[in-house]
Length: 80
Image: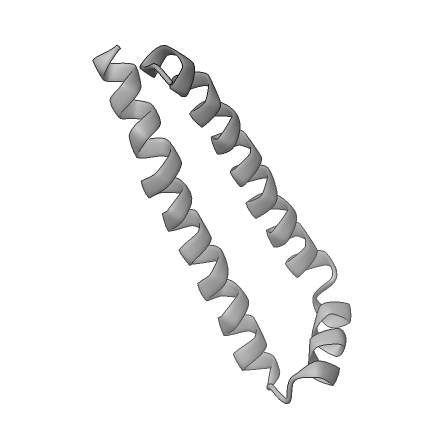
């Protein structure tokens, strides 16, 4: 796969990953209580722990997007 083919692929991956992150955030904000009830039945965790796990997960996912999508996309754009 050449750099010319890789650039659009990374662009679409970037959009898809940000859409997943936005969906996760929207679900967390709008359906917080329902999500907590569902996970509270499966795992014995407090609301604070539940919130911390989701915020940490979203932060790790965003860092992954930056390192694995944005940085290579910019490097290919600047090199090409």
